[in-house]
Image (cartoon, rainbow, N blue to C red):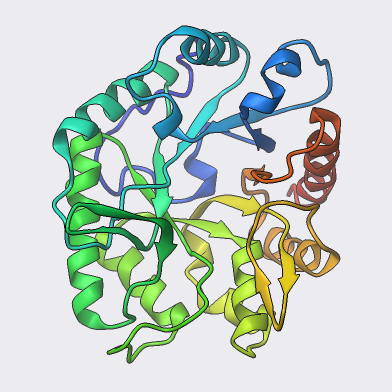
Length: 291
C-alpha cells in the first residue's frame, strides 16, 4: 500500500493550504464503472479520490481494488454523508471505522461538504444548505474541530451548490464559508462548478463570487459538469466541464498556482478515457500555473 501520503501531523490546522499537501496534479474519482480497466491503462493520472461511504466496513472486490489502486496512486477521501453542519450528533462508531480506512489508504486529509444531510436520524439523501448566520458558523466550526480530532487529520469543507437560501440567513455565501473555515481553522475544498452554478442560479457574477470565498485556504479543487433544467442549472456531475467553468478554474490557477484538481463524474459515467481526457485538460492548466 502507498503510505507516502499518510499525514505526519494530526488534527485541525496541520495542513494549511495546497502547497502543504503531498498530492499533486490532476485526478479522477474511483468509480465501479471503471474497476475493470483502471489498473490497466497507462495514461497520466496523478491521484484518485474515493467516496469512503462505499468502502467503510466493506471487503471483497471493493477493498481489493482499493488496495491495488493505493499501490499505484495517492488516494483522497471525499465524504457525502457527514452532515457536518447538522443538528444530529456525529456518529463516533462510524468515525472510528472511517479513520481506519483513511489510515489504510494514507489519506493526508479528509473532505466533506459544508451542509447538513440528516435530521432526527433520518437522511435526506441530499446536501442541504445551512442558514448563513453566525450561529451556524459557531455550531459547524465546533463540529469540524470534533471531526478533525476523531479522524486524527485535517479537514477540508466543500462549498456546495444550493437552490434556495435558508431562513434566518444574514450573511452572503462567501462571508459564511469564510467565517466557518476561519473559525474551524480548516481548509477549503473549492468546487469551481458549484461557484458557477450558484452564481447563475442566484444572479451573481461568477468571478466575484469565486473571490469572495477563502480561496487562499484551498487544498484541493473539484471540477464537474452540470445541466440546465428549466430556468436553473443543476449540479449533476453528469457532463464534461463547460467552458465557463474552465475559465473560472484558470483564474484560480493563474492567481494561486497549482492546486490538486479532481474531475468529478458521478452520473451518466462515460468510459474511462473520456474522464481521463478531462483530467488531461486540467493538467495543462496546472502546468501553465507552475512558478
